[in-house]
Length: 135
Image (tube, rainbow, N blue to C red):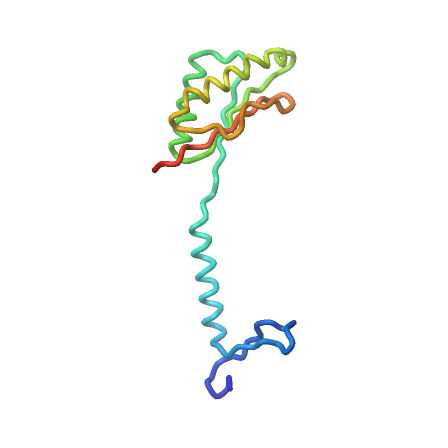
């Protein structure tokens, strides 16, 4: 039948009993499959994560400068990973680091929502912010 129609006989399910075959133009089938995969790939969005680093004793001017960068990242649609890095014995200022991160979250609450509250991981206290969806 496939030769009469000048098409290909394609085995769809070889493990079925009896095996399932279909008469089709195989090259056209491959082309359409690639086209579908390309469309699915276009619809997916890549999540970008930007990082901002603070120290436990970050000055107000430095904080404001980094906050402006954070606003820019969030407006561009990227997630924000803000962290306080504790060097040496500055780990005793855990509360300062947490206050700094919570202050950042409060200042950016109109642009972002907190995805992960400040959490100490080793010598870093990390907080993740995600941009608020625009409706």
